[in-house]
Image (tube, rainbow, N blue to C red):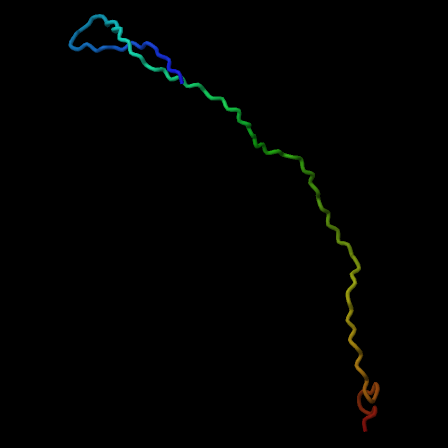
Length: 96
């Protein structure tokens, strides 16, 4: 990096003297290196996160009770055998 040298006046203090006029600075040349800060430009892709509001259709679900025939399995118990005496029930039917 290059250094640019510039003349900078430096004030010499003079003590115990009272001046009615302000003395001019003595020409003392001091070589001060000037550091130039060059801005570095970087091309950075700017990603903007926007919240996108999309119009969403509001769907109202109208629930209707609909009677649908459902096949329910019917379990039929096997008929018990009537045994030896048939449909006999009570007294007097086949009982001695």
